[in-house]
Image (tube, rainbow, N blue to C red; front, side):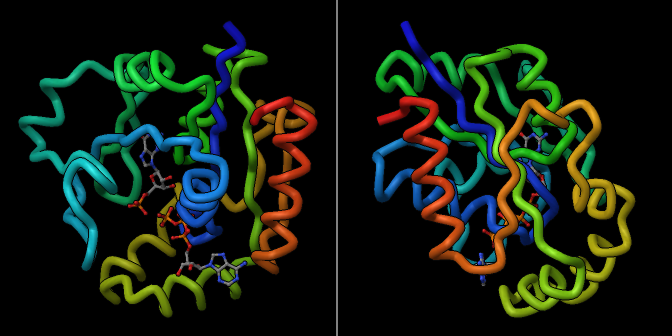
Length: 185
Ligand SMILES: Nc1ncnc2c1ncn2[C@@H]1O[C@H](COP(=O)(O)OP(=O)(O)OP(=O)(O)O)[C@@H](O)[C@H]1O
Ligand SMILES: Nc1nc2c(ncn2[C@@H]2O[C@H](COP(=O)(O)O)[C@@H](O)[C@H]2O)c(=O)[nH]1
């Protein structure tokens, strides 16, 4: 079977979730829900945006990969992806760049990685406008992970698509082209 996982990566606020929702709404490509110990943002729902966990419950699950990002844990499981692949040929997942490297290593050609790039000032403005709690936002913007993810990791060079997400309509057109090239949908 020609199963694909579209791995959407890049720094916080570069538009990963926006693109995964576009894939869901336009192409009916579901997003694999991941687990986190961070608190829900306004409007986020357990089992829809994330499986929200305590530190104790997070540690009880089995993960394909897990990372610490700006003071919280995040992880994704092989079981969730396999469950989605039983029903659909393609799925998407939103992860940091460390997670994206793990998916590329594990799934090779099956993993279509899209790295979203936005400059620091623009991404800071977008996160502020999104309404993230100001002290958490400051900590995130100062975190090592956030700055690391502004650049494509060396391990993904030549192995992933890069989209500069300045204009959402142009970004969507670029996503359409990638899906066509990869024969997804
Ligand atoms: N091209 C764009 N132009 C302007 N605003 C955008 C664009 N793309 C996304 N946004 C907005 O930027 C904010 C951050 O986008 P989104 O939540 O999708 O980012 P993310 O990468 O998933 O962030 P995080 O990793 O923190 O969850 C949202 O308010 C979204 O509507
Ligand atoms: N490697 C993984 N990264 C993940 C996972 N789930 C989410 N993420 C990434 O974490 C940061 C922060 O997310 P936020 O929702 O608090 O803004 C962001 O880059 C996500 O893409 C995961 O399971 N593994």
